[in-house]
Image (cartoon, rainbow, N blue to C red; front, side):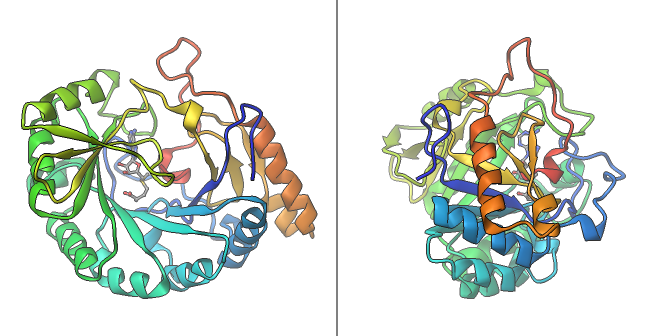
Length: 327
Ligand code: SAM
């Protein structure tokens, strides 16, 4: 078991396999994209596997692949199958914008992926184009349908709620859970990223969202299990699916944080909102031993901050964009 200085158990590694993305969500990236990390600076799959094996032996049991957009990186399916062979990894998942999911869902399932998170902020195709600056709403839906068809489960739909943009869709997203085995999760917009259009005033808080959902019917709390993470779980009475509420801004859940992040260029980040990074690539590429890498993990644990400082005067927007950290 791995613990940080605040007695939190750390068992979760989020791996961003690329900083490339096939969307340009306004709240995340500028229209022209961001300077990309040169190819040879990106960790190879073999390097990531080595890190995961070492960290898994110490206590990491949960891995999520993210990006950028993880499905744009070549060889991702084979990489998933290699990860799924690591015995200590009990929970392997992936976060995608869904654009390529229709083509990948069956292969990912065969490769050993059990569950998937799909980011989708609107159920309206024109608004999809407005926010992502790309067409593709139908393709994302086909991806979600394919994921259901091949029984990736659970399927979580993550919606970043923003005032004046998709706040009129809170109820429509919740209605999806009535007849589909989907988990719809509302996530507060966070002050991160290089998007130019959404500002602090756009945050639709979880308490506001919950109030709206309660007006739709009985919202029954569901006890959380060990794999739940920060979402508070609910079910609308009679619904097949579930609702999750994630409020990193209004209800910071740092005391339960169990995660570390690995960036595409081989840095461990101990908090989404801290620019403190521990360089593991330097050890990987300079003949570092497994023991050296284990020590870097221990350094990361020691430096994990107690909490983020969004909502306080100490808060500074972090240097790295969300697309290069892995949200
Ligand atoms: N491309 C993948 C996807 O779309 O899920 C993975 C990477 S993306 C950076 C991960 C998640 O971060 C997405 O759900 C996205 O909506 C979310 N995200 C990006 N910027 C955010 C922000 N400022 N506040 C809240 N969520 C954000």
